[in-house]
Length: 303
Image 1 (tube, rainbow, N blue to C red):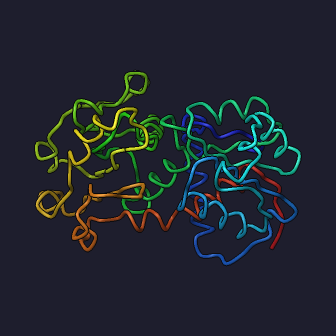
Image 2: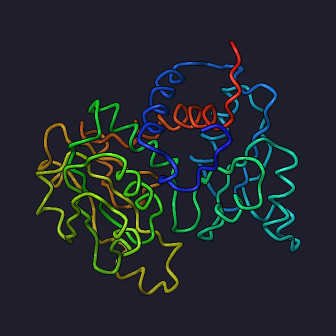
Image 3: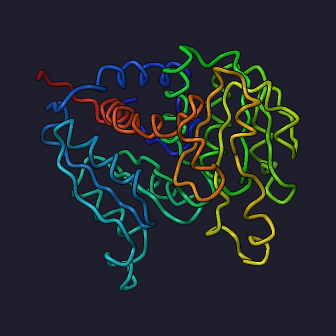
């Protein structure tokens, strides 16, 4: 993967996924390495972020890289009228890799077309969030020891959640037994995503009809910021709540994942159940992103 852009989860092969999982295992308990000593990583967050930005920052530091960048558009020359292309060209001159988040679909791909250094997409609009899919799949791999043959259900905002798009596309590199897509009719997975899938998919609106068959329940919040019309958001904002009653109907070893942040879609009492793995999932973000940096920037050095 040396010097490759990572814009979509489809940019990674099945072998890439497993190699990153193995590296993440290796990096899970290290305090600090010097594998990226002398490298500079730009964190270009044009849209607010807590977990993603801080985990990328931590991952870079733990590998010995230096970090520059910003966490809002307002703190850049974009606020003075500079265009995105010129900002990317500037960061291209200062660093060895750009981690980029932006509110517009396709912005990371656009940046990759003008950048000489690798672009890692940390979320672009409602398009994709491929490193979150890496974390999601690594969590499943850690819990079950495998990904193939599992039954998945994705619940919530499947139209605007970029994490959903990336996970569905990433699963084309594996062999899921079945994937249930649970959402209100207004928030179904977009056709261009469905058309690219190579495994059985069943759309439904009622989680109680399928909950007993699920190994992995992946929950997303309703993406308020993606709605053009707030009235439409109000109609669907509390469509689902994963509560203790629903969880009690899951398989004993079934797990619940969520990319976070959550709002009201998971009852806080679910946090204490054995099925709730979303905070464990969040804890794996740093080793996974360390592994990705190591793969992309590549120059190996001894400790």
